Length: 406
Image (tube, rainbow, N blue to C red):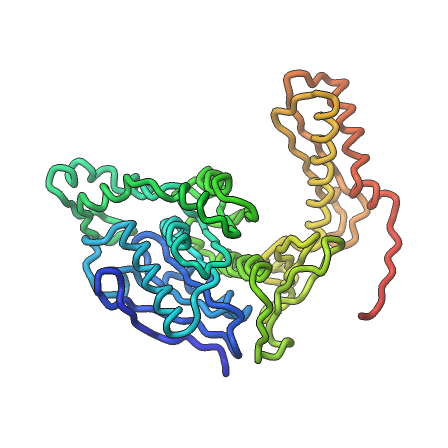
């Protein structure tokens, strides 16, 4: 059976029929995922569609739907609020449970991410929750309608322009937002959580990701969507997010046999042990690979100018990052032993000017360290210690590589 998008409907929390799209992979789905779109968006926003189909390519079935009063769904948006969004998600989970299989993965974007966290506490089959650009409190959305707050409080409602479209917001909407539940739910969830956020997000600042991450219990992971905007308008950012979620979720799902040919899609899996690295080509991508290092999953890809999709760092940049990270960790350990306070520490590694992208012989490392006790002598010592980290020594001393066929 080929991949497909099936249009369906189900009853929402306010007895309105909700429009949905169910992305079905070829063969038996590895698992079902439930996706919640951003505030005042729809299931067909580019980010939602690209993320769902990236997951579909990895063998996941994904249900994305329009919340009550939005998109093709019935109902009055003016009568909705954060709580009704949570209830709509639970209705969607009920539909999947009844007609197919309960969702193992709950995913949410922006305010949909906040709703996903709260809803997941009431979906017992949930194996993991992934949130993208999510606010740490539902009341965050009130900032976008602040100029109308006085009118809403006085008249009980007001027409607000959101993303260039008029919406009626009632006082009950604001009152419901004041019931802060997101961080409490994140702490109570006790399920694996993946937090994806862009440091450039101007709508929901990256500090929200920090709050959610700190509230969540282990196992938890954070992935930076480096150059992305809040809505993930660039399809490459959305596809990258989808690929990362698929790789991460696979770690927490039981093995599921698939009818699909393994050469047609990637079966993401955790490495057998915590030693070494692994890379497997991702289906429907030219060069992108699902890589793992010590059991941690991430995406590595060729740059676009080399024919890749740019879904992750290229291998040589990954080597540079490994050297930078190893140096930083080694410096932190050394400073702690010496009792030196490091207020800031940044290590940058890049190829020397004129070095080829894949045949670099010289790497330039820059260490920027600040602290109340760091004089020039101590800073010079830190630079010396940075060159003693394991990766530095591995690269500088040379490594013998023995290759064989499996």
